[in-house]
Image 1 (spheres, rainbow, N blue to C red):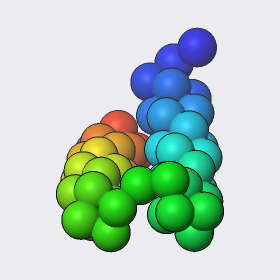
Image 2: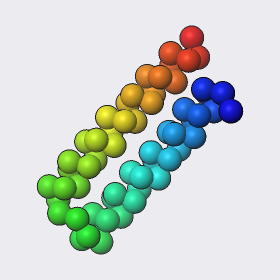
Image 3: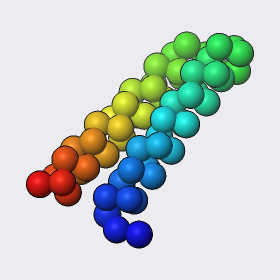
Image 4: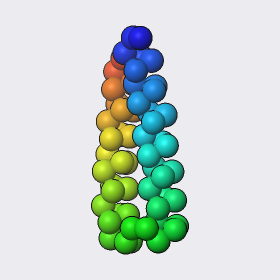
Length: 58
């Protein structure tokens, strides 16, 4: 598995994490404050992966 495949797999997995976090919030399993904190971290990782993907394509 090369870097591009690994990064694509990681992006897919972070989207699954994002969905689970949203589901937890919808089902009132986490507080709004915790949801916001986790969502910010997920968004940060997603942005990093996007940047790495762009640098690998170049």
